[in-house]
Image (cartoon, rainbow, N blue to C red; front, top):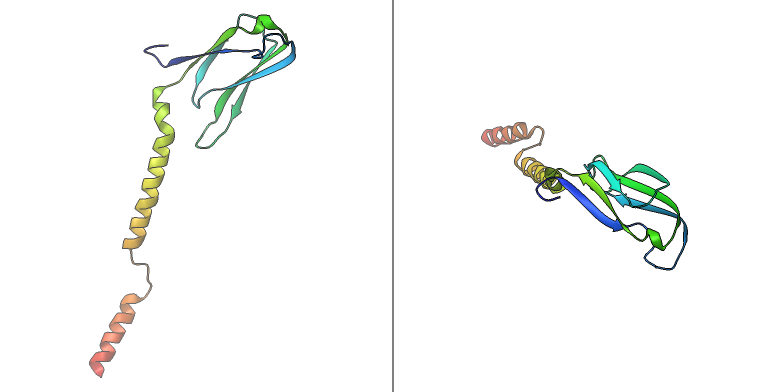
Amino acid sequence: VTGSSTFMLNTTFSSPFEDIVVDEATLKIVLPEGSSGIKWVTPFHIDSVDFEIQKTYLDLTGRPVLVLHAKNLMRYHNQHFQVLYSYPSIMLHRGPMFVVIGFMAFFGLVILMTRVDFTIGQEELVSAKQSKRKTE
């Protein structure tokens, strides 16, 4: 939907073949992480609806999955249906931002590690060598 954070997916439920009967069909729609307010509109009856969470790389909470089950699908069911969901635009930048922050933290740590002297007793060793040279 233009000008808001609500999006619409328009797709078909049934098989891409016209003259086929499907006994049971399950359609899984994986939405972006952070999606909420998931609604669907179908021109025919859906037997059952489930919600799942699918975790992939760079996900913190997982992606919502809308699972639609239907039985005895025919040519009539090759119609479009819509899935409406809201998705905040700031969520688009969350994954890349975590990667950038991770790289910055890693390189910052490397810079710190190269500048800090972690040797133990270095000053005592240098002062002992200097005092030995003075006595000779």
